[in-house]
Amino acid sequence: MYHTPIQKRVLTVEDVSCFGKCSTTVALPILSAMGHETVILPTAVLSTHTGGFTGYTVRDLTDDIQPISEHWKKTGIGFDCIYTGYLCKGRQVALVSELIDRVGDERTLLVVDPAMADNGKFYWGFDSDHAADMMKLCVKSAVATPNVTEACFMLGEKYPENGYDRAFIDGLIGRLVKAGCKSVVLTSVKCGDEYGIVGYDAKKGKPFSYFHERIDAPIHGTGDVFTSVMVGYILSGKPLEDAARLAADYVRETVEVTYPYLAEHPYGLLFEKTIWKLIQKDGE
Ligand code: PXL
Image (cartoon, rainbow, N blue to C red; front, top):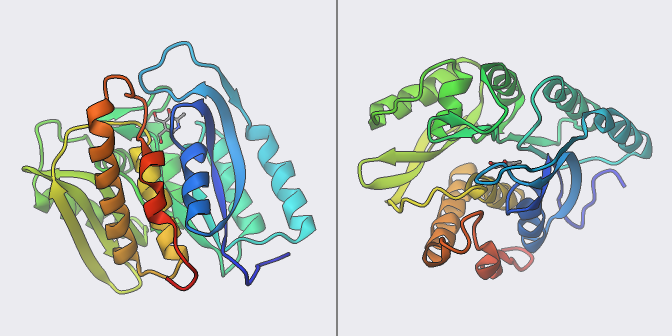
């Protein structure tokens, strides 16, 4: 039951937003379509995600993290990957860090998406203390996937409201690595008319970037779709840069498919229309 030779097993640690497509409700279908076994640890249950909705309910599941993970440890369940996303503010982040030590081992790839902010603003309820906590988790990870806003906030810097250039982005990655991050994939990078990712592969000691023509469609959960697909490809054996490029292509195509329907479907990506492209036959 520990690690299974049949498929890779990935634990997602993030909220369940019952309505609205983000976090667990996109990670599970995507990772399953890509052939991986999924295990979930819901960090909170919300009636909807917090983008564009008001009056949503939030049940914080912080107190369940330790008993659930202790049971897994006793049962001998191991993970090829632990992928953390949206976490609640406060002691939950440290408890997730302890969970990683409890059920992860040297074979477990830790991917941290510090989902907490975008477009220069924190999501509802988050602040600079949470950004500092998320930075600690990113330092622990093998791969961190902040967007530009999250990277700035984790470094205690201001988001450049009036725009930035490529030198700023390269500097941001340099400062994250200097602070202890290993591989980094910076998402939502807007340079001129282009939109894309800039990364650093710590295994290869190599920077990389990948840009597309820009489409302005700020849709909640886009980062979750990106990281889920990237994790899926990494677990299928792709090097980080290839996995990140393929994930960026998938997100780009799915944004294009969603764009005409944004008025009636503003709360998430129409990933169900493109998910078939992620289905992989064994060995691919
Ligand atoms: O990663 C996006 C996300 C995840 N979970 C919740 C959110 C958001 C974005 O707003 O509100 C609850």
